[in-house]
Image (cartoon, rainbow, N blue to C red):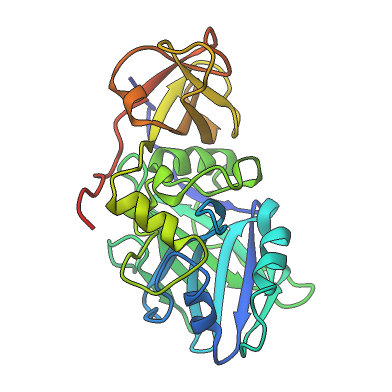
Length: 311
């Protein structure tokens, strides 16, 4: 059950919740190839990558949308609350690689664009377009049937970048559209909580199983090919506020949580929606609740994309 809106919200939202890590140098792509779950060695200028940075145990430390601004420069967009720790950890692995990592959040402005203002991009998620003025556009997964993209513009020192053309959109509404897309951006409360497949990353272009090694690769691959993955991400609706990191319970076990809220946002109509990573068995039936066994009920919603059975 979903709440019907009179019309889908669309427009342009400034996204101060996202930060930018810049990788510069002749070995930028090679370095990221050895650290992240996606293939950056073959990254072209007309495509972006969804990727995760994992611990040795395969748990996600951060998630990124990455793209090239040039052959020696790659930008990684991530949740700002994870940026400092992620940059510090990534920098530990640079060693002699010809790459410089830096926090470039103050050098770029980021907007989420939904609806009619998304134009000039192929329909395929993670397609990318670079403009002559330095602006970068990346197509995202749609939300509730609406086209979405990220727009990234460089900022001159002391000069605010011009927003893309379109009506202003409340960032809180953009957060809701993100949740309804079914693709979760990792944030601080759930750092190290999930293997990428627990957020369906293998089904939305976030994991490449044919590339070389990276931290946690053995765990990620084993989860996929040995059938050991027992948790997936699901969309849910709730009548009361949800919080990232909140436990989720199933009525079959009042003592042990069956999942975790990975993303949450208020609906523009009423109630809240979330992305919950939980045991597959818990999604087969029974009552789901947030926070405790007798907490507010969660209602499962269908995923807006298919889960890949064969990689």
